[in-house]
Amino acid sequence: MERRRRFNPIESLLEFILFNSRWLLAPFYLGLIGVIVVIGVAFFRRFILEAEAAMNGSPDHAVLFVLDLIDLTLAANLVMIVTFSGYENFVSKINTGNSPDRPSWMGKVDFSGLKIRVIASIVAISAIALLKAFMELAEPGEGAGHEIDNIRLGWMVGIHMTFVVSGVLLALMDYLTSRSEKHD
Figure 1 (cartoon, one colour):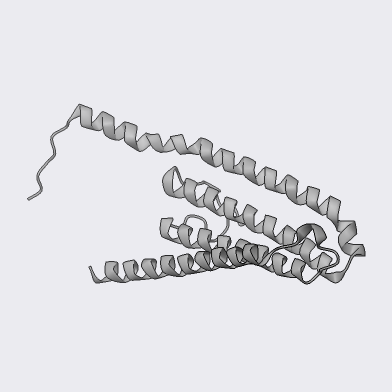
Figure 2: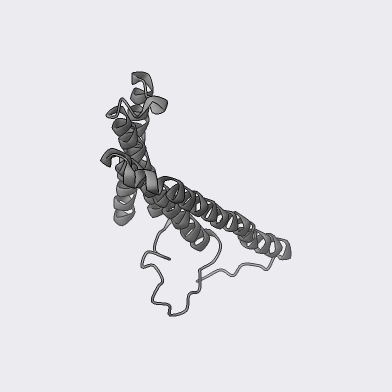
């Protein structure tokens, strides 16, 4: 037999305030859209300023140029994933109607999946920064302003490996959690 809860107006008001306080996050997501605009401006500024030099320079210079643009694109993708997923998980569902352009992952990325996507993006961005550093080492004549000493390179590799290990551990924790939830 189910016991009925007594109506408590103070509790109801508190729960109403707590539930609706999620809307306090909305300005943060609007700010993230502003971040995407800033990244877009940086992307096109870099493209305009460096495109000619990349076409007229060495192949390595062109590859570095492309890696810079990919790096900015990955950062923008990361911000968009966090914006969509965070908003849908913590504020409200995004009503896109029957739009065929709605990304298939929207509404399906929970907090656990968001963590994995964020760390994967950070690992990819770190890998690109590391690749750029190694490529700059390969150009001793041109990279005079971008020389990287062994200590800095070691730190970059160490930090990248920390991101990789963190990602693997997060994925392992999520896997173990999902297995234990299936058994319960």
